[in-house]
Length: 434
Ligand SMILES: NC(=O)c1ccc[n+]([C@@H]2O[C@H](COP(=O)([O-])OP(=O)(O)OC[C@H]3O[C@@H](n4cnc5c(N)ncnc54)[C@H](OP(=O)(O)O)[C@@H]3O)[C@@H](O)[C@H]2O)c1
Image (cartoon, rainbow, N blue to C red; front, side, top):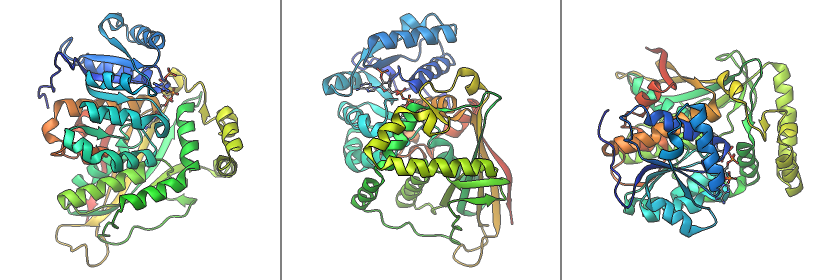
């Protein structure tokens, strides 16, 4: 794993530039880069923070220096001022970095200019977007150009959707035979003070739901052919059901995971002739009280999100309309320290001696990806490890640049080992049993 990093040069002096470092998530990405760079010989990783306000970026470095007891961060990490609305400033930023870690969202509003600037100026790009419309739109608009330029654009490298996408690949690789279908169940837990998600993600979700019609027309343009179904068809679950697997009520997971996993499976099928795995993603809700709260909240959200007045109320009062699940202040460090996530995968398939075209699956596997608080601890870890994988393992990435999902980009790399070493643990719980 200890291969040398892609090197910087006089005109491209930084390995990593964190764009949007002053945002709620950006500040934790800064801390994670500082921690990860300290694992190597001092001064090996050259990095900078970027954003539209120099003053805010200085404050972020000060705060990180204090939290991590690393006063040197204030002098060793450079600051780049760049604004999404000023393309020249973005181009100047992208010319200076090997990889840009983009933390500026909602991506549907701010992301495309950054992708474009990276592709045109030869910087690899990673984001933590959970908005399928943006992710798939970038694939439609920039894949060929990124391929020509040898630039890797890898979206959804946060909690959305590295655990799910890499978790499916991990399960497939651990399965002895052909894994044909897998379901994941997400549970999150928090300590006595509870937890919440920052407003930035709430806004991304509001605009995402409001725009769901556009995603359908985008997919028509992408012209996806249906993926072949190998083995028994995955069972369809309702919008709300009691899950015996988790011993609680569950509902389909509303994030980007299903769309990202499907794109990965399509890529691996089309490029490598891998047998595609069907996927269903669910989230645990809890008991009946949580179900009633969620149903009421979902109905209210759905009614309001389709009207501009409703949307502005949702945006103004995140805490009220999400029953405290989202807030403008975001979780406290204590809440984050006491929270965790667990994604359990239930897979089924056919052992090597059994033809998937005949009969029912004859083997099962149960795997797990678990880690610390999802939004602001696991997400920075996943994003930074994805960036380090590009820096250290360029030969294991797809042959050409392009716009990729995490699974497509990192299937042949050691990303899972890197995540295991940094607190996001992949493990086999049971199986495969014939
Ligand atoms: N995948 C995941 O699991 C995951 C987890 C966490 C977050 N996210 C996503 O990450 C994104 C950020 O979330 P957040 O909560 O960190 O939001 P946030 O606190 O509002 O941060 C937004 C950042 O964007 C910057 N920004 C806004 N307009 C800009 C412009 N014109 N030019 C340059 N920078 C600009 C802001 O700069 P200023 O500081 O100057 O205002 C700030 O740094 C969201 O899309 C969220 O959904 C995803």
